[in-house]
Amino acid sequence: MVSPAPIPAPDRGSTGPRARLVIPVLAYCGILMAVMQTVVVPLLPDLPRLTGASAGAVSWMVTASLLSGAVLTPVLGRAGDMYGKRRVLLVSFALMAAGSVICALTSDIGVLIAARALQGAASSVVPLSISILRDELPPERRGSAVALMSSTVGIGAALGLPAAAVVVQYADWHVMFWVTAALGATGVGLIRWTVPECPVREPGRFDVPGALGLAAGLITLLLAVSQGGQWGWGSARIAGLFLASVTVLALWWWYQLRAPQPLVDLRLVSRPRVGLSHVAALLTGFAFYANSLVTAQLVQAPEASGYGLGLSIVQTGLCLLPGGLTMLLFSPLSARISEARGPRITLALGAVVIASGYALRIVDSHELWMIMVGATVVATGTTLAYSALPSLILRAVPPGQTASANGFNVLMRTIGQAASSAAVAAVLVHHTSLVGGAPVPTLHGYLLAFGIAGAVALAACAVALSIPGDSTPGGTRRARGRTRSVGDAALEGA
Figure 1 (cartoon, rainbow, N blue to C red):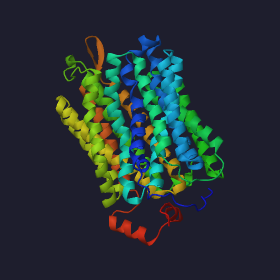
Figure 2 (cartoon, rainbow, N blue to C red; figure 1 turned 180 degrees about the vertical axis):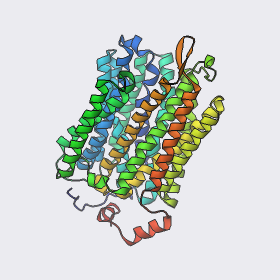
Figure 3 (cartoon, rainbow, N blue to C red; figure 1 turned 90 degrees about the horizontal axis):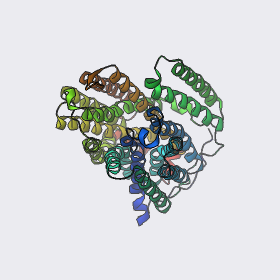
Figure 4 (cartoon, one colour; figure 1 turned 30 degrees about the vertical axis):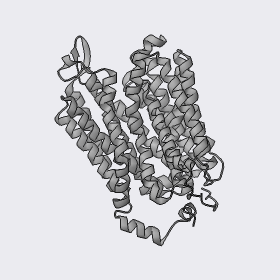
């Protein structure tokens, strides 16, 4: 990999109105990205009637965004390192806004799915923004800003569900996409006005074969994981997809190790500090996602089931809202813990808190207030863990590879979430009973899903503690004071 040439450090001394707005603008973009991912959830039950499509076709409104986001996040992260993070951030946000406009103008399911795939490009917003924050902020402000940026995923998801449900309930469903289109266009304008383009670049030629190979491997993998429940895990189609994925990704790995300028620096990924951080991201993504999936279904289950509360989708969103607000409030605490004890300790602590939240859910999932407490505890742990992951990456990779490395980390979270969705679906499908003539998951099924997610969270804790790194703040600061890498020297204006 060609190292970036020495460059003048960005001016972090500016205190004008634009400089002060960089953090809130990037946080706004992250929240809107998460809102975009969740706005279709309230629509799914009604979309077959509204579009004249089958339920299977309608499910691709979620799958298309998932697949495109997984593929484009590492690709756009690498492009940001090479061609400018602000430029690529503008492109990804513009694609999201364009996808919203297309969704607002049509009821054709094929066009809607294609538009949702366009919106998946916004998944790169968080890693690109974290990289921009590293470039633009002084070290004393960087930790809290990165923690806030990481938390926007949960904040936006918690805000998006009830907001979208209200729109769907009281207005035409196209209005929801007009709203996200307007918010997206506003985000593009704010980025252009406030976010500077940092000159830190990773020179070279973009690895097109690597991007195509990664896209093919990820699409076949995530397609098999996300559709296994519908198509049958033992079907020839799913087996063929898994086989194709393994084959393509093995060839891609072989090519990346030999490419002069690879899309993903696998030698960097193989370092324990980086590779174990990616494994922890996958496990944390799995543990976090089960909370939203299971809670939403549990509280909406009919009261005749003996445990369900029969809540509407709007009420369900309001139940998850405290978790999102908690993520906003606890992100500064995560930064302080990382500064005092190191991000790997913060990550391990977050995983333990997630497991504790699931333990509460297993103890009592009948009372609404207890369900909300358990879900909020899981959200708190997710805040700690998700805020620590980019800090681990930023400490372990050169400045010229921060966007691509964080993009790969977000990809691992996405794979974990897809696996969580498949696992939860498989558990609930195998634990059902008839209520009013319709199959409904049993409480035992939900508790089993909580137990699996909690066990995965504890595995994430074990991985976090095995990551090499500083464990005491004094050692970290003294080491930084004695020696700095060439990249950090350029970054800090030395």
